[in-house]
Length: 238
Image (cartoon, rainbow, N blue to C red; front, side, top):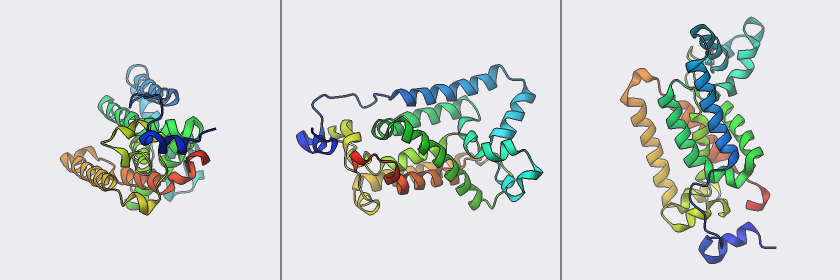
Protein backbone atom coordinates (compact mmCIF):
# COMPACT_ATOMS: atom_id res chain seq x y z
CA UNK A 1 0.00 0.00 0.00
CA UNK A 2 1.44 3.34 -1.03
CA UNK A 3 1.37 5.99 1.69
CA UNK A 4 0.28 9.58 1.17
CA UNK A 5 3.88 10.70 1.71
CA UNK A 6 5.16 8.40 -1.02
CA UNK A 7 2.39 9.53 -3.34
CA UNK A 8 3.50 13.08 -2.85
CA UNK A 9 7.14 12.27 -3.52
CA UNK A 10 6.31 10.45 -6.75
CA UNK A 11 5.46 12.27 -9.96
CA UNK A 12 6.47 15.65 -8.61
CA UNK A 13 3.98 15.55 -5.77
CA UNK A 14 0.87 15.16 -7.97
CA UNK A 15 -1.33 12.08 -7.43
CA UNK A 16 -2.38 10.16 -10.56
CA UNK A 17 -5.83 11.78 -10.50
CA UNK A 18 -5.65 15.55 -10.87
CA UNK A 19 -8.07 17.51 -8.75
CA UNK A 20 -9.28 21.13 -8.82
CA UNK A 21 -7.69 23.49 -6.30
CA UNK A 22 -11.05 24.21 -4.67
CA UNK A 23 -12.70 20.85 -4.13
CA UNK A 24 -14.44 21.98 -0.95
CA UNK A 25 -14.88 19.22 1.67
CA UNK A 26 -18.45 18.59 2.75
CA UNK A 27 -17.84 19.50 6.40
CA UNK A 28 -16.46 22.88 5.37
CA UNK A 29 -19.51 23.54 3.21
CA UNK A 30 -21.65 22.66 6.21
CA UNK A 31 -19.81 25.15 8.44
CA UNK A 32 -20.24 27.95 5.90
CA UNK A 33 -23.93 27.08 5.58
CA UNK A 34 -24.31 27.24 9.37
CA UNK A 35 -22.67 30.68 9.47
CA UNK A 36 -25.00 31.94 6.74
CA UNK A 37 -28.07 30.42 8.39
CA UNK A 38 -27.28 31.96 11.77
CA UNK A 39 -26.81 35.41 10.29
CA UNK A 40 -29.94 35.10 8.15
CA UNK A 41 -31.97 34.19 11.25
CA UNK A 42 -30.55 37.20 13.08
CA UNK A 43 -31.17 39.54 10.16
CA UNK A 44 -34.63 38.43 9.06
CA UNK A 45 -36.32 36.51 11.88
CA UNK A 46 -35.19 37.66 15.31
CA UNK A 47 -36.53 40.87 16.78
CA UNK A 48 -33.94 43.54 17.66
CA UNK A 49 -34.29 42.67 21.34
CA UNK A 50 -33.76 38.95 20.76
CA UNK A 51 -30.80 39.63 18.50
CA UNK A 52 -29.28 41.91 21.13
CA UNK A 53 -29.71 39.17 23.72
CA UNK A 54 -28.09 36.62 21.41
CA UNK A 55 -25.09 38.86 20.83
CA UNK A 56 -24.77 39.63 24.55
CA UNK A 57 -24.64 35.89 25.25
CA UNK A 58 -22.74 34.65 22.19
CA UNK A 59 -20.15 37.39 21.72
CA UNK A 60 -16.79 37.19 23.45
CA UNK A 61 -16.54 39.97 26.02
CA UNK A 62 -13.06 40.09 27.60
CA UNK A 63 -14.21 42.02 30.68
CA UNK A 64 -16.46 39.09 31.61
CA UNK A 65 -13.44 37.16 32.80
CA UNK A 66 -12.44 39.75 35.36
CA UNK A 67 -15.46 38.75 37.44
CA UNK A 68 -16.63 35.44 38.93
CA UNK A 69 -19.11 33.44 36.88
CA UNK A 70 -21.57 33.58 39.79
CA UNK A 71 -21.98 37.31 39.21
CA UNK A 72 -23.09 37.01 35.59
CA UNK A 73 -24.69 34.83 32.93
CA UNK A 74 -23.06 31.41 33.03
CA UNK A 75 -24.25 30.75 29.47
CA UNK A 76 -22.38 33.74 28.08
CA UNK A 77 -19.35 33.06 30.28
CA UNK A 78 -18.82 29.54 28.97
CA UNK A 79 -20.30 29.80 25.46
CA UNK A 80 -18.77 33.13 24.46
CA UNK A 81 -15.20 31.95 23.76
CA UNK A 82 -16.51 29.69 20.95
CA UNK A 83 -19.97 30.99 20.06
CA UNK A 84 -18.58 34.37 18.97
CA UNK A 85 -16.94 32.65 15.99
CA UNK A 86 -20.42 31.81 14.65
CA UNK A 87 -21.73 35.39 14.81
CA UNK A 88 -20.89 38.24 12.43
CA UNK A 89 -21.31 41.98 12.31
CA UNK A 90 -22.93 42.07 8.87
CA UNK A 91 -23.18 40.32 5.52
CA UNK A 92 -19.91 41.84 4.31
CA UNK A 93 -18.13 40.61 7.44
CA UNK A 94 -19.62 37.15 6.98
CA UNK A 95 -18.84 37.08 3.26
CA UNK A 96 -15.16 37.93 3.69
CA UNK A 97 -14.72 35.37 6.46
CA UNK A 98 -16.52 32.67 4.47
CA UNK A 99 -14.37 33.38 1.40
CA UNK A 100 -11.07 33.21 3.26
CA UNK A 101 -12.27 30.19 5.22
CA UNK A 102 -12.85 28.32 1.97
CA UNK A 103 -9.46 29.41 0.61
CA UNK A 104 -7.36 28.47 3.64
CA UNK A 105 -9.38 25.68 5.21
CA UNK A 106 -10.10 23.62 2.10
CA UNK A 107 -6.66 21.95 1.88
CA UNK A 108 -6.46 21.86 5.67
CA UNK A 109 -9.82 20.14 6.15
CA UNK A 110 -9.11 17.71 3.31
CA UNK A 111 -5.86 16.82 5.07
CA UNK A 112 -6.90 16.52 8.72
CA UNK A 113 -10.55 15.51 8.36
CA UNK A 114 -13.82 16.81 9.79
CA UNK A 115 -13.29 15.68 13.39
CA UNK A 116 -9.83 17.21 13.77
CA UNK A 117 -10.91 20.39 11.98
CA UNK A 118 -13.82 20.78 14.39
CA UNK A 119 -11.44 20.51 17.33
CA UNK A 120 -9.15 23.03 15.63
CA UNK A 121 -12.11 25.39 15.16
CA UNK A 122 -13.05 25.27 18.85
CA UNK A 123 -9.54 25.52 20.25
CA UNK A 124 -8.38 28.24 17.85
CA UNK A 125 -11.51 30.28 18.59
CA UNK A 126 -10.77 30.10 22.32
CA UNK A 127 -7.05 30.81 21.85
CA UNK A 128 -7.53 33.82 19.57
CA UNK A 129 -10.22 35.28 21.84
CA UNK A 130 -8.09 35.13 24.97
CA UNK A 131 -5.03 36.32 23.07
CA UNK A 132 -7.03 39.44 22.28
CA UNK A 133 -8.25 39.65 25.88
CA UNK A 134 -4.72 39.61 27.25
CA UNK A 135 -3.43 42.21 24.77
CA UNK A 136 -6.38 44.52 25.45
CA UNK A 137 -6.16 43.94 29.22
CA UNK A 138 -9.63 42.43 29.29
CA UNK A 139 -11.33 45.59 28.12
CA UNK A 140 -15.09 45.99 27.72
CA UNK A 141 -15.63 45.13 24.07
CA UNK A 142 -17.53 42.67 21.89
CA UNK A 143 -15.74 40.22 19.62
CA UNK A 144 -17.67 38.39 16.89
CA UNK A 145 -16.63 36.62 13.71
CA UNK A 146 -14.71 33.58 12.51
CA UNK A 147 -11.58 35.60 11.71
CA UNK A 148 -9.56 33.92 14.45
CA UNK A 149 -10.41 30.49 13.05
CA UNK A 150 -9.65 31.65 9.50
CA UNK A 151 -6.28 32.98 10.69
CA UNK A 152 -5.55 29.66 12.40
CA UNK A 153 -6.24 27.84 9.14
CA UNK A 154 -3.88 30.24 7.35
CA UNK A 155 -1.18 29.67 9.95
CA UNK A 156 -1.55 25.90 9.76
CA UNK A 157 -1.37 26.02 5.95
CA UNK A 158 2.08 27.59 6.19
CA UNK A 159 3.34 24.27 7.51
CA UNK A 160 2.37 22.24 4.43
CA UNK A 161 0.44 24.00 1.63
CA UNK A 162 1.81 27.54 1.36
CA UNK A 163 5.33 26.35 0.37
CA UNK A 164 3.74 24.94 -2.79
CA UNK A 165 2.03 28.15 -3.90
CA UNK A 166 2.84 29.09 -7.47
CA UNK A 167 3.39 25.50 -8.57
CA UNK A 168 1.15 22.73 -9.90
CA UNK A 169 1.99 20.76 -6.78
CA UNK A 170 -0.35 22.98 -4.76
CA UNK A 171 -3.17 20.79 -6.08
CA UNK A 172 -1.70 17.98 -4.01
CA UNK A 173 -1.01 20.18 -1.01
CA UNK A 174 -2.85 17.99 1.44
CA UNK A 175 -0.35 15.20 0.71
CA UNK A 176 2.69 17.41 1.31
CA UNK A 177 5.06 16.64 4.18
CA UNK A 178 4.59 18.67 7.34
CA UNK A 179 7.41 21.17 7.76
CA UNK A 180 8.86 22.03 11.15
CA UNK A 181 8.20 25.45 12.67
CA UNK A 182 11.70 26.69 11.86
CA UNK A 183 11.94 24.75 8.61
CA UNK A 184 8.78 26.40 7.23
CA UNK A 185 10.23 29.86 7.84
CA UNK A 186 13.12 28.88 5.59
CA UNK A 187 10.70 28.75 2.65
CA UNK A 188 10.53 31.98 0.68
CA UNK A 189 6.85 31.49 -0.14
CA UNK A 190 6.01 31.19 3.57
CA UNK A 191 7.97 34.33 4.48
CA UNK A 192 6.26 36.29 1.69
CA UNK A 193 2.86 34.94 2.67
CA UNK A 194 3.32 35.85 6.34
CA UNK A 195 4.56 39.34 5.38
CA UNK A 196 1.54 39.92 3.12
CA UNK A 197 -0.81 38.57 5.78
CA UNK A 198 0.64 40.90 8.42
CA UNK A 199 0.55 43.89 6.06
CA UNK A 200 -3.05 43.12 5.12
CA UNK A 201 -4.07 43.11 8.79
CA UNK A 202 -2.20 46.33 9.53
CA UNK A 203 -3.82 48.08 6.54
CA UNK A 204 -7.24 46.63 7.38
CA UNK A 205 -7.02 47.84 10.95
CA UNK A 206 -5.90 51.30 9.86
CA UNK A 207 -8.38 51.92 7.05
CA UNK A 208 -11.26 52.67 9.40
CA UNK A 209 -10.48 52.59 13.11
CA UNK A 210 -14.18 52.94 13.89
CA UNK A 211 -14.72 49.37 12.66
CA UNK A 212 -12.59 48.02 15.52
CA UNK A 213 -10.86 45.32 13.49
CA UNK A 214 -9.73 42.69 16.00
CA UNK A 215 -6.18 42.31 14.71
CA UNK A 216 -5.18 40.81 18.06
CA UNK A 217 -7.54 37.88 17.51
CA UNK A 218 -6.22 37.48 13.96
CA UNK A 219 -2.64 37.35 15.21
CA UNK A 220 -3.53 34.98 18.04
CA UNK A 221 -5.33 32.64 15.67
CA UNK A 222 -2.48 32.66 13.15
CA UNK A 223 0.12 31.86 15.82
CA UNK A 224 -2.08 29.11 17.24
CA UNK A 225 -2.54 27.46 13.85
CA UNK A 226 1.13 27.74 12.96
CA UNK A 227 2.53 26.55 16.29
CA UNK A 228 0.08 23.73 17.04
CA UNK A 229 -0.54 22.30 13.58
CA UNK A 230 1.48 19.20 14.41
CA UNK A 231 -1.06 18.28 17.09
CA UNK A 232 -3.87 18.12 14.53
CA UNK A 233 -1.99 16.57 11.63
CA UNK A 234 -2.92 12.87 11.21
CA UNK A 235 -0.08 10.38 11.79
CA UNK A 236 -0.15 9.40 8.10
CA UNK A 237 0.91 12.93 7.17
CA UNK A 238 3.78 13.12 9.63
